[in-house]
Length: 328
Image 1 (cartoon, one colour):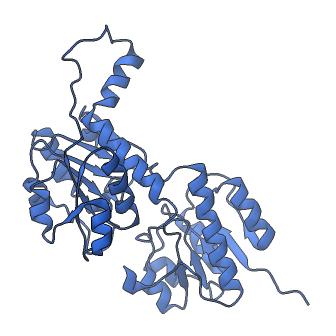
Image 2: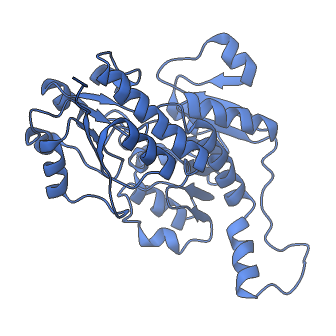
């Protein structure tokens, strides 16, 4: 008698290639429209499925997990970040959680460099003039930006993505500095000519550009709070392609308005898509709609990791990308 196929519920539209492969392997329920599930829909899915495939737009909290059915055994997250999932409660209920680490490091690092250049070279202002038809020719003092070669880049969180940012920034002639919970191995520091700062405060006070590349955890919430932001030089730029909650957004906005920071490049925001309206009015702020990992190749690779995690679980083994509370 053939083995019964796992019941899998996917909460958002995924690339067609990923959905096709999921349908071939599992009894999968796909999302018809590309909108987040309501809380009621998530509860229903978690009551009936063996596996839930959520994304960062789905808040899988303690209350939701408490309503899950006995069938649910795996939450195979489509994405690396799991701060939207109460991993500890899931494990207490016997539900495993997996993610898709390492897939988007290069894509996100590319966008971090794009934001650094966008802010320092005032690219959006130039685009606006061209698209609005207000450009009336070249001038020697028009839209003067700053050269990034020789500038100090402080990387907050030099893991996979932070290291990829360092590699790219080196090619632009930037000096690499970083702060981590744990210092990197000497050979990695040497490869990137990277200077380690045990004190985040001291690093922030000396950087020209700060790139936020650490995950959002309870220990990193508002890691860049008002006090720490005040340590930065008035001519410094801050770039965030990680999680908005790492920065006290209101404090950053106040400093940008007061000229206490030179600019910001942001792909993520503290309150999701509820963006502080003041940010939209500032010419020295480059804003993107959370697209750092948005490449066709990356999204398909994420889906392949999800499938491998589910298939390995279905075969009775530990998913290769299992998330445990101690990792957070």
